[in-house]
Amino acid sequence: MSEVTDFFLVAEVFALSKFEGYVTLKSHSDFPERFFKLKNVYINVFGQLKEFLIDDVKLSQNVFHVKFVNFNKSEDLHFLVGSKLFVKPNNSVKLKTYEYFIHDLIGSQVIRSGMFFGMIEDVLCLPANDVYVIKNSDNKEVLIPAVKVYIDSFDAKNKILYLTEQADIFEYDEN
Image (cartoon, rainbow, N blue to C red; front, side, top):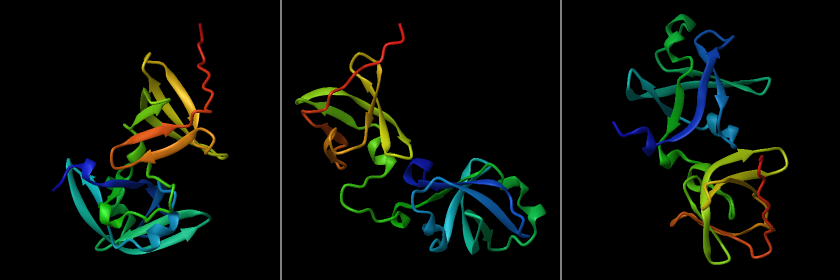
């Protein structure tokens, strides 16, 4: 079986569901409707990714509950609580222009005024907009809002984010 890096994280088994034979998911996807279309997921079981076929999906109070084929009793599902659910890249959601997966952004170089500025270490998903956490060339953390005034373009193939020339960046120093 392939390594986890060859897959996309979509959810985590949060708990046993109130529905017999189902688990409750904590979604890590910006596209929760995807769970209704999934036919299978991959879960790390005892150090190996194993394929689990999806039998049914329920949505109750904005929480997804999934039933896997051949798992009919909740007592048989305890070992999955806390497990992460992955999909293969061919099951990824198709994005619109100027939308990118977080895993495509993390690890990308950031270029400002034609010069290396830093590397994207994380993406914070906040209500107003996402925020890129960048470790700059001075090894300081800089937060850049993912809005057009700051972002000129992103080259997903080469993992390079270009900041606009107008992007005023203020570094916060706690000292």
